[in-house]
Structure formats: C-alpha cells, structure tokens
Image 1 (spheres, rainbow, N blue to C red):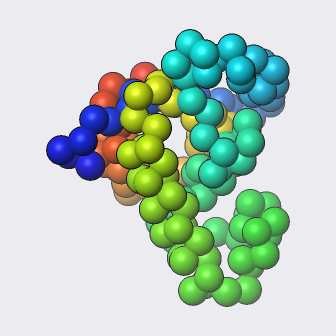
Image 2 (image 1 turned 30 degrees about the vertical axis):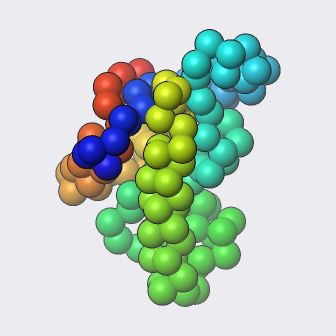
Length: 137
C-alpha cells in the first residue's frame, strides 16, 4: 500500500483486567460522534473489542478461546485461511477508509502476541498499511 494514501492508527493495547472494556464501551457509545470527527472503528475484528485482531498475527497454532470460538481447533488449514482472510480484509478496508484515523483496541494483543516474531510481523504489517501509528497501553 505504498503508493496510496494510508490512514492513521491509534492502537489501544489493553492489558486484561485493567479497564479496557470500559474504553471499548465508551467507543461503542460514542461511535457516531467519533465518526463525525474523522475516527473509524473497524468491524472486521469484532464490533468494539477487536478480539480477532491479535489472532491474525499468531505465528503458530494456539488453541486459545479465540480459536475455539471460531471453531478452528481441529483444522489447521482453515485456521491459516482465516488469518489470511482477516489480513486481506484489513488491507482492503485500509484502502477504502484511508481518510480516517482508525482505532483498534484489544486486550489480547498484550497477552496473546508473546513472541518477538509475532510483534515484528504486527509491526511490519501495520507500518505498510498505516501512516502515523500511536500506541496507547
């Protein structure tokens, strides 16, 4: 996405049991006002808690609650296909909604992306699809 205008990103990395749900509820309650101010809350990773976002960056199979809820515990090929699909949807959504500042929020980023290579993959992907990135922890 190097030749196109890229959106900006606010990435909220919540840690579990520290009030992330309150922030996500605020975003949900104020979505219309936020959109009028130029902010975009993507729905591809979950409506307001983007619980699927970290899943897209898992480097190896993890049989956690996200994977179980998606019904992917038994099928590694479907697991990988779902990850690729989410990343492709994100790339396409970035192209369509490139005039907004995105807000992605998930407490699972800190607890599920635990290896250096997962963090590097996340970093590389975000830098190729977003212009300015602010991380809020």
